[in-house]
Length: 310
Image (tube, rainbow, N blue to C red; front, side, top):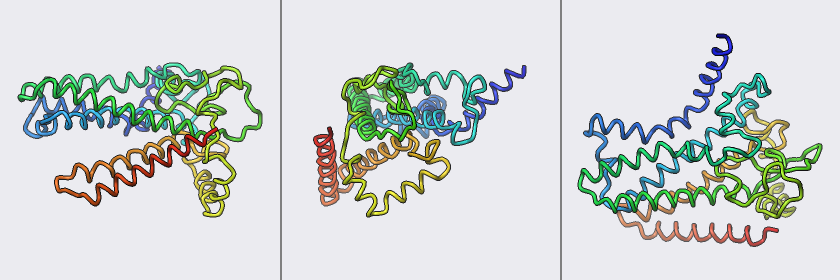
């Protein structure tokens, strides 16, 4: 009975820690359930007129589920350290199932977490198709929009994830590892599996094959560090790392999940600033061209970083 209560306590604690991930995960299915019960308030949300609108729906529904994976890994990977919880077996503070699925140091079950996150969306898409057809929308319109939106969401998040691996910096370790170890000389899996980026397998011997994870970029060169120092960014970074909840154990770097979250925020903020003037109900040509120009400059900057990487 005591073991059951301990396990129940772990689930209750992490249900609270994962509340934002769960909210993102359940929002779309709950909206569909509400519409089944009462179509007065939600029908206008769940029925679109053309495939472009269904594209947007699929993009953000899929993105919400992927963001839920990121939030879950933030809490489960760094939770014990951030909240002073025990993270050592056999008294690990995290539920065993969640740890196995989201915090696997052997690099296993990485793709399964994505499948689990997207499982509710299969039901959501099925309901959107059924309800849209009942409201007179052509099936091909719904299917094409949902398929393209899902594809664009995965491409967008894949690029953010690739940038995370490209800018990965190995922390200063007292004893250099001899194999690729997550959280040390290999970046932890925050979203997509490592094999999608052709990275070295976990626990394989060094030096391994050259990948974007070992790349030397503009962010890791001496010139960039000098600019950081002159602008005071290095001091700001040290200050933030020393704060509870921002820096990893030992205060040598940010939590990896925070790095990925910052990259994702930049990608989606830029995407929003590009989309809103182009889709505004009132024509905004000046704002649209400014947004397009800013996006072109950003893409050029990304290409420079990639082309000059070694």
